[in-house]
Amino acid sequence: MIDRFLQVPGTWLKCLQFTILIIFSIQMEHSRKHLIQWILIIMITLAGSLSLAGMAQGQQPESHINQDDRRNQVNQKLVKEIDGLIQKYGLYADSLNWDQLHKEINAIVFKESDTTNRRLILNVFTRNLRKVGDKHSFFITTATAKSIAKREKNAPKPTARYLGSGIALISVPYCFNSEKSKDIAFANTIRDQIRKVDSRNNISTWMVDLRNNGGGNMWPMLAGLNALIKDDTAGYFISPASNNEQPWPSTNGSLVFPNAKISNYKVRNQDIKIGVLIDSMTASSGEMTAISFIGLPNVKILGQPSAGYTTANTTYYLSDGTMFNLATAYVADRTRKAYMTRITPDAFLDNVGNKGLEEAVELMKQLK
Image 1: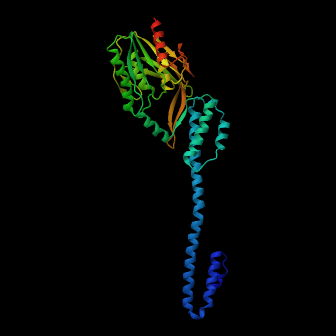
Image 2: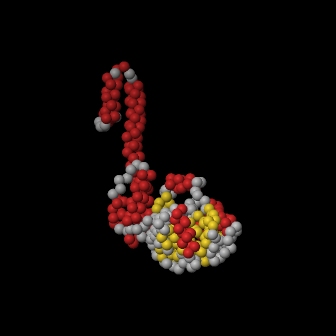
Image 3: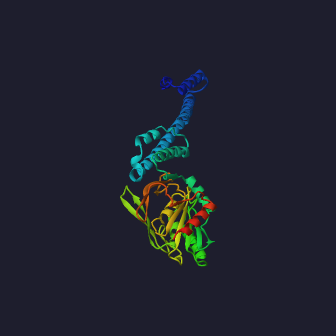
């Protein structure tokens, strides 16, 4: 039995061999019974030490490998999700160089940080979409969403004022809200501001100021400004992928998306002229709000070319919580004229500040 132990190789077992030899060297001072007990104790102790050492040496690499596998799975899943959504619904899917895009994805040197890896992946997709003319698709991570939510507290409000000579101004800023109640409040604020000015003055011309309106949710804007026009279809989303056409209903007292009832005030003079002010900072839903007026006989678009974010985005929620706002449709006005890029004004203004407003007012005065 002892010979068998002495023949087993290994660093730890060599220690066992050495220990046993020492014990044999002093066996004259101990009984055989005590000797066997010592051997068993040493075997148990060394076996435990070997087990712990194996765990200490083995767990670290195994944990590291598992972490790498998990990270790779997360990255691959994110890429597959985005890839699939663009190919199925993306307005610019056929324009993308997919081989080049996948080559760039495969060339990414991933880090230990999931946040960093996410950013690297999203940057590749965004960069390739921009190359083919998609200015509008974008990603909102959970961290960015929190930042946007903070901006809501200090967001500007719609305001209206009387300019004199039968002309009034309604200024409509961007509408970035995360709650239905705030969308309703935004639409009601527009209508209430219009009502206050309209009920006290004889208005022949309304100026709708969409300068610096970077977008957000178009529906509260359309619902509020419905106070100036007759109910009708104000425009369309046209999706080539699904061959679908979605109208923009403009209905008094109704906020269509989300479905809600709002103020139903309409201006007293239904034959008013409307001048819509835009500039290079009028973007996305701000542009769509301007488009909702185009095609009406009493409307003029004034200012400078808009930003050119005239595609409709659909929001998809990815598995890591990121919101993917993908351009899935282009927009058309009430006459079904499509807008694939910037809105060109009917009359250009050299200045889009206060002086530009004065110019716009003078232009509207000249219109019959």
